[in-house]
Length: 397
Image 1 (tube, rainbow, N blue to C red):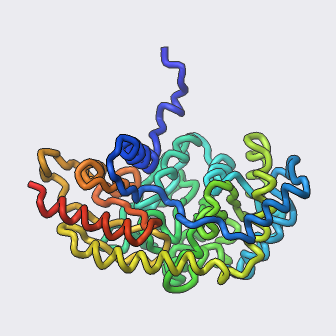
Image 2 (cartoon, helix red, strand yellow):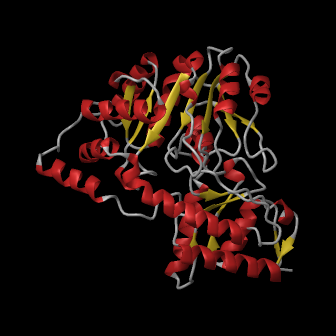
Image 3 (cartoon, one colour):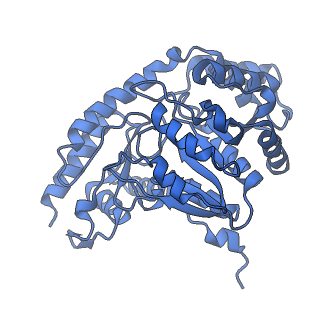
């Protein structure tokens, strides 16, 4: 007898963690693996944020917070959204969660009925499809590619929306492509979405600060769809606070209250010490943390030059985040060192086992012809990883 629910049996494991765990196992067995799998900044949390956490402990912030978060934090988020994104959200429209993952789950749980469709432009973050499944929805993939800069068009979106469409979920800047939608591109998408008031936009903006060209635009800036949009963000990427688990949603009032209801029954409020530290992080001028972004940009440039020399790789220069997402379709259908390469996951496993470099195959991102590398690693590791891959592929038969 199967004791697990059908809902759980429909879910897959995160391929990101599958590959990172495999790399860890190999390291534990004495193999020199360079793992470029996880999307986690390799910096320590800035000292002023850590001090705020110490202060919170000493001030006895050890009891439950309000379900949607401390009012002071929600006000700091409101101020940040106005300062950096020109978005007007009152504290009552903000729900602080246990990471941006929970913020997305809250929104989906609030709006999705069994059989509702959620549009996912490919490539998408690996958990999006599984989250939709968990809520009983069905994902509708809108394909993009290396040729289209991994972005959908307004025409694609318009053709995909129907009466069953309940939401569109995407990230900009994008994990895994490292690209983002421009103001004009988002404007054209917003015009389409405004024609369908039954559709909610879930805009994951967790990488907004890690941008090497200009400030990114939030689709919530377009007034015609403000009441249809949920903005998702958090502390993990820009502030290197991945383990602190603070994310948030900013929504129209009707949806914010629903998210609070969902969270109140699932987890209640987020960690109180991390919330207090997040207030300090958000109130600090973003330029204080620019050194991390400058380091990522330097690594990006080094890795791009080296990756262009790898045979069979088609690669775009990422404009944001800290990922490369090269197209490796040249190798699909080939046999390398006796290994049949059916898709990007096979190719990623080949690189791990033969070059001892960990990356993540693109199947679970909705792009089976691509692989993802995180460059949240030292420049020395990135240089050595690209050298190993180039060497192995040049010799593979």
